[in-house]
Length: 227
Ligand SMILES: O=C(O)CCC(=O)C(=O)O
Ligand SMILES: [Fe+2]
Image 1 (spheres, rainbow, N blue to C red):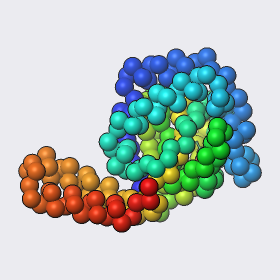
Image 2 (cartoon, protein in one colour; image 1 turned 45 degrees about the vertical axis):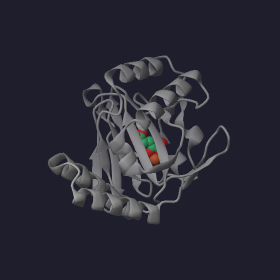
Image 3 (cartoon, rainbow, N blue to C red; image 1 turned 90 degrees about the vertical axis):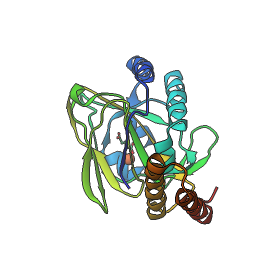
Image 4 (cartoon, rainbow, N blue to C red; image 1 turned 120 degrees about the vertical axis):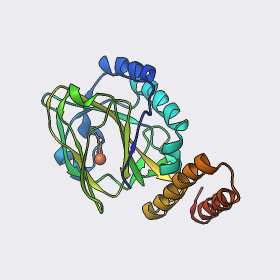
């Protein structure tokens, strides 16, 4: 499933993030790439231990925690500590690649299975040319470029890359989620049911049918979730 999650950050959080990103110690993004992706990767990233990355991580994680659409779509069990990248100038692209199935955090060596991939945008589309996130999957090929503060969520299994940025800078956070529900198909069914239930409640309030279907949602989650 590919999902646009709007307004993950408030305007105030976005401003704080952009201030932190401005004076950050950017380094070669190849440092965290696997053997295959290092060949096509040409961007910059923040070292995860620098103070700016730590402050940014706290803002992003807090924003994710309060977002019901993100929770419903990802059903997160573990979130890889968000990382931060920049494309522009001579380090301006990331060719087609696949993400490693399991990532180890730099801190405690915690393992995260990369069921869901996320990109949270910090720059608005009119601030740079190019820089679309190109995602190839069973739904075909999609090019994604979102307003600052918005996020895209897509299957960790897909081939994806970032088109060359030919003007300005593209700033983003990227990270992975190990979901309580490993299967993309099952997660999608739960998400669709949750969204339909929300609309049903808006229209009819707490009807007997809404209660029964909420029970079905939770029984499916109980059957499929690995917590
Ligand atoms: O910059 C992005 O949107 C995606 C980055 C990415 O695919 C990666 O670092 O593996
Ligand atoms: Fe990637």
